[in-house]
Image (cartoon, rainbow, N blue to C red):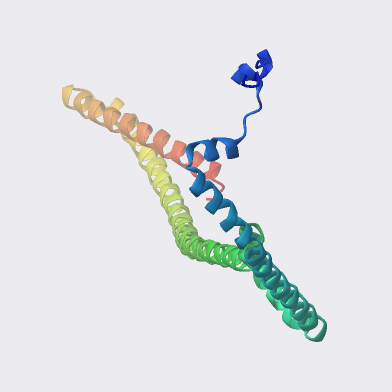
Length: 225
């Protein structure tokens, strides 16, 4: 009896690259038939259990959300506090809040310390300025007193010079009289005396000129002699 002839495989079926690749085919191809049947059966048995557990978790999540909404409606201040705490946990709002509160306080404290230091330096400068001012005032007063004393002394000196000039004029007049008397006397002795008197008269003249110049200097300083 002739066996039925098998259909010749087409070129599409004989070429493995043209058939679609599936991961399940690879797993099933590498697994023995018994193992493949057991895996499929086990997966079918687990699907209802997984669906049930998922439903339980979903129901629990929905209940938690409902409870949260009820708490939010009953105690809005608690929700606000929790929300604020959650916001503070974020880095950006936390840094902003620090800059607006503690940062500002630290900035104000730093400015206060700086102002206090500036005030201390200013106080030291004012103290030094007051000390220098008092010192200069005392020095000026002493100079004025010394000038007054010096002015009085200059005036007295001018008066003494005036008296001395009068004495010089008188002595010069006497020297002229002696010179006139010696001219009438003959001899070398008279000539020697005349020379001595002439020398004294010349010296007196120089002193008189010098003292007159000093009187002019005193007058230029504003002191009346």
